[in-house]
Image 1 (spheres, rainbow, N blue to C red):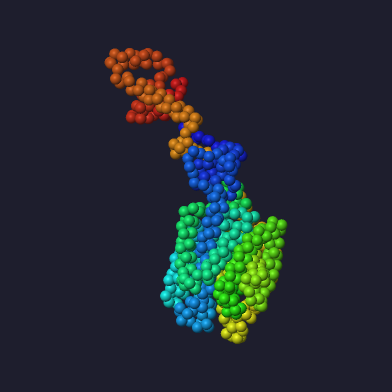
Image 2: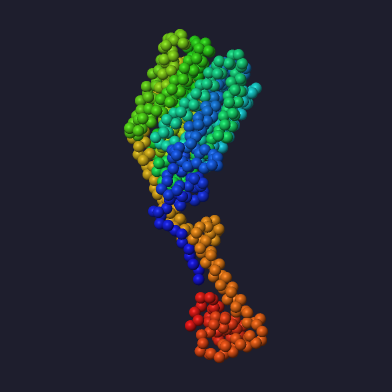
Length: 605
């Protein structure tokens, strides 16, 4: 007979460790004891100083070094974006090196290179962004940053316009491609209530890198030459990639979604993957996605103009020296950094009151941001260090950056984890397309309508940011609905995954296999093993006693035979039954007194 050994316990009596397979995102050596909730090792739980520590040194988990890892990501993000505007302060010097006139300078080094960096590089950045949903994001980010550093060096080493153009195209693809990867990591490091502030920090680091590279190039360009800043940017970028590779860990995908917490604590991973149909559905049926994409285009056209022409505009049209123009751009950059941090904090505050208030805040600050810029572009002040010039430059950068840092958190909040990288990539492609088209808009207006640079600057900035404000007002209606729908869908997925996991556990725990006995030996198993060995020894003894008469002397055998023959009514012995069974196997099965081999437990009557 086969005995089924059950070790199952009712589900409501099981701890998290009972429901967690060895491949769980929860650390297998730190399983929960009954009733404990302290030792879950995942990025979604806060660190508890009272957690039981073992003697063996262990690697710190993501949640224990969250801020340090975020800082390293931010530093690398700053470094890869530092070459963005390095050309801007030295366009005239570069034009002299390549033999361009002023008109050719604006076309080849301004509009054309910007088009390559922001638009023609889109296939590279799109490929990187799509990989963010299927590859290890840490290694993808490190590789992207490293290639960005190499292409920055190649830009500075360019000896022909063709080589410069190609290097800037690759460099632009790496800069843009780093955005969806970095923000996808951010989405799994911080929860919904923290993402605005985290996004502002990451965006501020990007802005800091852009401005730092531009300011450094303006300061040293006349003495060290325009390639020098590209070389320094390259070295810093490669060092930052190495630091991320060594010190940053990959977070659990979807690990900070509140509706998935219960599923992850049960040891079930988030298994959804990016599919083309899922991406198309997210882009086509999600109204907030559509609105965010379009506002990204209209808001980014003026930024493309600012990145390429602001420094040169202040020195040529406004009459400031290159160092003074660079100083105002640096003040503008400080305003962008301050606006990024302040915008993230205010956006998080407005969202905590009501999700609809966040788009209204973004719409209002986008429209207000037009006026400081108009003052900077058209003011009559001649002292770049004066109060009025500094006020316009700082407030222009600060106010314009207040809404922009909240766009990507909105995208993260309305898209499930498996499509976030693709959604961020799509938004990034549109943003880069608009930034690349911005300088072309200036040159087209100048060529077709003979408009001045000043007029073209004012028209494009005022028109496009006004349209953006109207689009963000519509977002106030769709954002709460789409965010709630995404969270509801994740909750349904988590509930279904937990039910499947519990069914599998109930099925697997009813039968204990040999492999389980080999790996799980307890007191009950020991008792069963001893019982089995005892039965085996008794049966071996019976076999020995059955065979023994064959080796007795003739007299002993006859005595035994006489005893058996003398009392025909006596109860047959087990030895007799066994000999009968063996004889029947060899000769006549019909004469067998029993149908099975008699064991120790076989009844004799």
